[in-house]
Length: 463
Ligand SMILES: Cc1cc2nc3c(=O)[nH]c(=O)nc-3n(C[C@H](O)[C@H](O)[C@H](O)COP(=O)(O)OP(=O)(O)OC[C@H]3O[C@@H](n4cnc5c(N)ncnc54)[C@H](O)[C@@H]3O)c2cc1C
Image: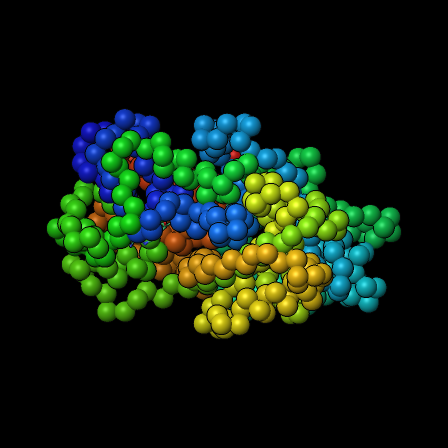
């Protein structure tokens, strides 16, 4: 198909849908429209301002990039003075202390007994049979890569908290080559020298919008689309893959030649009225609950430079907490305020009592010493993302390939974090590029590298 032919409809105005629309506009392609069910854009990367003037994201969002195109896009959307630059300072809170991330290089900070157990396990790593990534569980991978001590003290409890599934339910294939077996010599040197070995530093920085949270990026992108192309507050309810028609919840029907959908893949498949499925495809995901707390007073000294912290222990419900006020002074209503944002995962095997969650989280902030005086709390904000993490479950790739190939044969491109359901290419940069690459595939037949070669994408920078 050449530019100028056929109508392309995009479902969803998160980073992926906006990426697709942006590329169409950039190529001068006019016959397209975007439908977004929310009355705001950004999807899981949206931001919200509460009545007290605090800004919240849907969990800590940091701008990673594997693509020069994405970097250029960010610069085009927000001028240099509109960003705040940060060193990526991440910590673990365990055993009543902060330990720099990653733990394996900083086990010297653990109580001696825990440290020796971690070291003993690490010294066994790499000595046995190589791991068969096609058949291994995520638990096998953890044990193989980190040894029993680190697995027991951090990797297993932490991963249970993040994924909301036990690591033996996840596969290991999606990890690819990304994490190297820890260097025991370096770890021993760190212990002997009493040295912190941090993952941050001058080369490990990220930028955050000065105003409006992460969502400002996507609001800006949406505002630069041609007038009339973006329709918010309108959801896709159903579609007919034979007649190539979409049924929208405002009662209208929209014909299409090509569909780029960023709604969850299982929902899209279920909504096809021409080929109704008997049951929902067995894709697995987890939800995330965000608990924001706005506080009066200066940010405590111990948190003054921290970006985010991981929490493997069970005296609190969250897996991660971000000091969001450190990202931009405008994330709080004024000087003399600061803010914390905790993330609590949820799944059918790790349920959350919605009525008690806020109290449990507040108690967790107290138990971990993040909040010392409850009277300093001036605002709380909660948000539940029902689909937040696309779980890399066993059998995922076979099911995904079948579903995505089937849709592709119908001129439907299901892309993005839940459109393609691949956690390893589910960040904002990946999502934008999946939208862009889908457009280029439709118009020029170009291969979609982000979807097809996640390992390659994550191991190097592209165009
Ligand atoms: C807790 C958490 C932390 C994260 N941290 C980071 C991070 O640090 N860095 C990073 O790069 N990424 C991060 N991400 C990932 C980031 O949020 C996603 O990459 C990004 O939002 C995915 O964009 P998307 O467009 O693919 O999907 P989404 O953002 O999910 O957007 C899909 C859109 O489709 C719309 N939609 C759904 N159904 C319909 C329908 N029937 N009709 C019309 N519209 C519909 C939705 O309303 C939504 O707006 C994080 C995600 C979470 C949950």
